[in-house]
Image 1: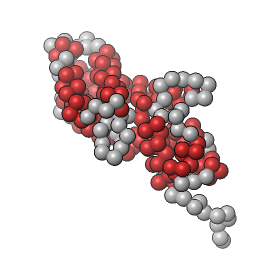
Image 2: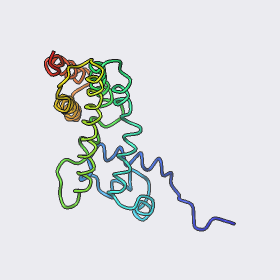
Image 3: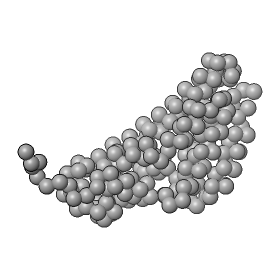
Length: 201
């Protein structure tokens, strides 16, 4: 039996990738529907039919970003032999990820929507939750090191994780403001210089 209706006249994966880069470069609020349809090569009815709404499209774009643009940052945490190497790898891999040639500078999750309003409250909460998850991921790696005797018992792992994620978020802003890869690596080195004091050594 022939399939009813016409097939979509656009590549959904391509369109989503273009939307992701547009949201990444301009942020949720500054990206208009006309910006999106132009970048994605579709009209508004097709966008709504394929993705539901601008907010739903943004959420899907953020998921794509996590799968394609930043997994190496988190791999650096899980694959490192020590907690110190995990945090250093996290920051130095971030320096590379936030300054990829041909990509918007910085991080979509950090820069996508910072100021909540009536029109973007759900988007802001989604990004807040993701940033909180990042702190949790780093804290859990530190907790494993405490359990293994690598780091001192009684370590305030939540505070240490929050510090290093805050550094990473600042690197995103620095990258967007024009800081190059060398500068971001220097920031990472500076943050790691505080390691011994932060972990009580």
